[in-house]
Image (tube, rainbow, N blue to C red; front, top):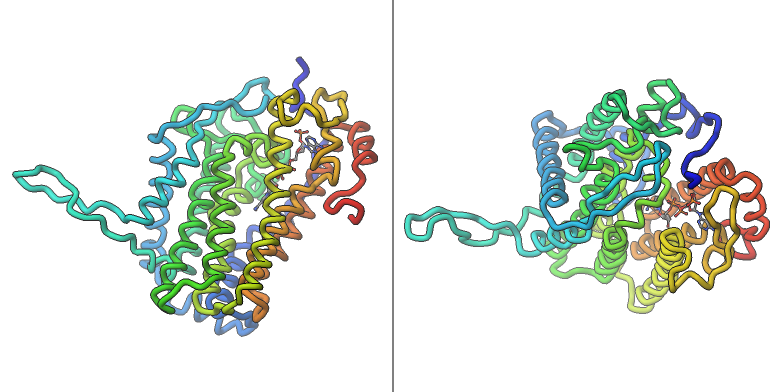
Length: 439
Ligand code: NDP
C-alpha cells in the first residue's frame, strides 16, 4: 500500500528562517512576562521601569528556584498520572519509516483526577500504632500561590522550557531518531526552534514527550490557573462574578474537549509533521498556560460587572464557535479514521492520487479552514467577558487570529506539496478559506 505520509519535498524555511527563529526565541519569553504584568495591572503601559520593577523588582534566584521546583512537581505529577492511570493504547498515523507509534491515552482521566484534587485537596497522612498509616484530613491546595507568583512561575516555566528544548535537541542526535522534515535544516538555532526529532520518546519508547506536553501539564495547568484565580476573586470580592464563571466554563470546556477527544490529536499537524523543539515545548508549557489564562487573571482585579443580557449574548457567541469547531474537527477525524463510517459515508469527497480523500461537502465543503473559524469565534467570546475597558484581555483573540492565518498558510503549503494538482482541484471546489462566500 502507498504510504501517504511519505512525501517528496524540498526544504523550505518557515518563520523567517534561522534569523526569524533566533529572534522568536529571544522575543517570546519577555513578551510572556510583559503580558502577565499588563494583565495584573489591567492596562498596557510603556513605562519600562514600571514593567521591570514589577517583574524583576523582587526577583531573586531563590524564588525562581522555588517556583521551578513547584513546576517540576506539577510536571512529575502529570507524568505519574500518564504512567499509572488506566489507558487506551492507540496507534498513530503511518510514519515515513513505515511504522506506526503506539500512544498511551488517558488524558481525560488525568484531567478529572487533577480536578478532584483541586476541589477536595490533598490527603494529610499520619502514623499511629493503633491505625498504622492513615489519612487525617484533606488539606486545600495553596491555590493563592498561583496568583501571588504568577509572573515568577512564568519566568520559571521559561527557564524549564529552555532546558527541555536543549535536552530534546541533543536527544535528536541519537541513532535511529526519526527526524521532522521541517526541523532538519542543519542550522542549529533553526532546528532547535522547529524541533529536530519528530517523536522523541523515553521510558523504553513508551512515553511520547510531544503528545504528553501538547495536552497535559500546560493545558490542564491552564484550567488549574483559572480555578486558582476564581478562588482568589471569591476571597477578594466575596463572590464569583458572571464573567469569571463564564471564562471558567468556556475555557474549561475547551481543555476538557481536547482531552476527551485525545485521539484526534494524533492526526493533527503538530503530531504528524512538526518536530518537538522550542516552538512546541515553549508553546505548550509556557505560552498556553500563562497567556491563555490572561482573562481570568485580569478578571480577579478588573471585573467589568456585565449584565445578564451581555453574558447571555456572549454564551450565544461561544456556542456558535464551539459547534463549528467541534463539528468540523470531529467530522474530519471520523472521516480519516473510517471514510465508510455511519456518520460520514454520505459526504462527498475528492479521491486524490496520494491515496487519501479530501472532503468536499459538510463542514469541509463550506470553507477549507472552517475549524479555525469556529476556534477563533470561541476565542473572541473569551475576551468579550472582560468587557471593553482594556485591550489587554483581547491580546488572545488578536494573537490567535494571526496564528491561525499563518497556520492555515503553512498547512496550505504542506497540502500543496502532499497533493500537487489534486490540491489545486480541491481549492477550486472549495474556494473559501475561513468564511463561506466571504474569504
Ligand atoms: P487541521 O485539523 O485543519 O488539519 C489539517 C490537515 O487536515 C491537512 O494537512 C490535511 O491532512 C487534512 N485535511 C485538510 N483538508 C481536508 C479535507 N477537506 N478533508 C479531509 N482532510 C483534510 O489542522 P490543525 O491540526 O492545525 O488544527 C486542529 C484544530 O486545533 C483546529 O480546530 C485548530 O483551530 C486547533 N488549534 C488550536 C490551537 C490553539 O493554540 N488553541 C493551535 C493550533 C490549532 P491529510 O490530508 O494529510 O490528512
